[in-house]
Image 1 (cartoon, protein in one colour):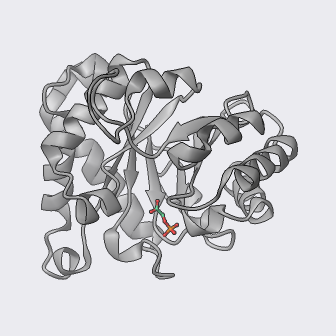
Image 2 (cartoon, rainbow, N blue to C red):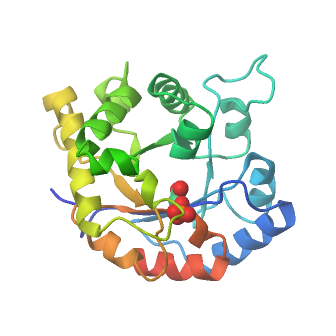
Image 3 (cartoon, rainbow, N blue to C red):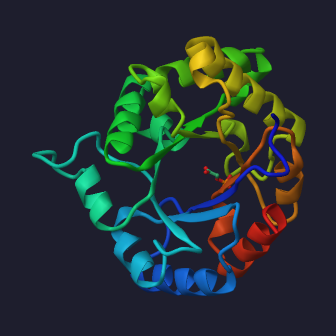
Amino acid sequence: MTAGAGRERLVFANWKMHKGQAEAQAWCRRVAAALALRPGRVVAVFPPFTALAAARAGGAGGESLALGAQDVYPATAGAVTGEVGTDQLADLGVRFVLCGHSERRRLLGEDDALVARKVAAALAAGMTPVVCVGEDGPEREHGRTEAVLRRQVAGAVEGLGAEAVRRVVWAYEPVWAIGSGRPATPEQAAEAAATLRQSLRARYGAALDGHEAPVLYGGSVDPENAAAFARAPGVDGALVGGASLDAEAFVTLVERVAP
Ligand code: PGA
């Protein structure tokens, strides 16, 4: 089965290091009110940790707008200064957790092994990990995209059984497309989604029969180009950074991806 009719559509807003509490609450109020709950559509917002409670107060974590975290420390709680564990996220009603965003891999040195621990911790806490993978510009230019994706996928699922892998959401986010205003083409996104699923099949074989992993595209998605990505074969939705900061623009984008 390829993505398209009948598949769940996911549209995720990644605010990164933006918005304080008042703004977060106002954005969530507007978006939650504007988006009616639609079967087959999942919309989530990923505020910074400091605005999770405000987002929740604004209605995120409810039916029409789920709550996500941009990261997690791979433990429930403990003596880890400056980090946030799964207990704290669960307490806030967090349902999705970004794992291995390229900004964290690049700026904070997160490697595949740490990403795998985060994925496992999120799953153990009953949350859905959203694993971000993608090549950088030189890797694409040198024809290494597929190898990079395969390595990142294998790294992220290290130690996971097939049942756990079925609960993972994937985001293909080419590093060169993030925040650049230069998105991948829908064809490139479709190719990457196929590579991702092949990597999983190569590893798990028949244990994944009947399961088509959800794959989002992220990287300079905006209200104008979002529909083209949503139509790309094998692409189930979008992970949106910059274009998610404005509530009205994000609602427009959601309606185009998942009417
Ligand atoms: P962008 O970010 O939409 O601003 O390119 C996407 C992301 O990094 O998740």
